[in-house]
Length: 293
Image 1 (tube, one colour):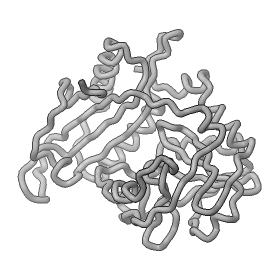
Image 2 (image 1 turned 180 degrees about the horizontal axis):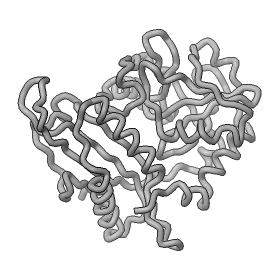
Image 3 (image 1 turned 90 degrees about the vertical axis):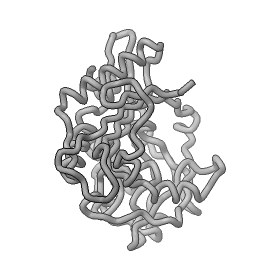
């Protein structure tokens, strides 16, 4: 039995063509987000849907993929989430994959090619509250992150750099690994964005030539001044890590997770970060972030 539900071009299926360009060339995009059904309020929604949708639109524009009308995407979204509810699933992780579509051999694509739209829903994995309180350990990765200024910030399907970096450790001691670009700037984790703080100022690596401008990264930057005096996007080298007081990581599923160790550096968890974690985990704030289905 599958532990996921899949919808492909509006039909429940788990099969795609062997000549789909997403499979052949990584020719596509994806988004990962959380969804919930708040039974007491009878609210079904996806967190930060509009932000994810805007990044999909941006990516399709850059990659020249014909994105179907928003109404169709919303109909697909509702169809799969309603099926989840029928199966007794009240929350989970929603993943959208958009490939250029089915095409022949070769890099050239036909102008009238139709995209493949895949919606996947996976069960939620609850983050242990003890981890939120105590934090996690990270390590440095040797495999570099690929650089391409035209694709930087987008979640395209070419993620082999993250796959190879994640293969560098197998134990559960480390939650994630930190990746560098070719200039030895720290960019992001294999599955997270990175934040550091010092003297109540929040810092995050610049996303210019590589890396993903995560939705939760954007949300934290937009709300940072509720908890910190300022927020700055800067270049961060490995040798300045020791100057920071604390560190945390973000993505759309875990939200905010404090870090206690990166390499030989030990971080503390400040009150500002604890307040921010609480802010995004509170039910009333979570419901505000749900785009209703």
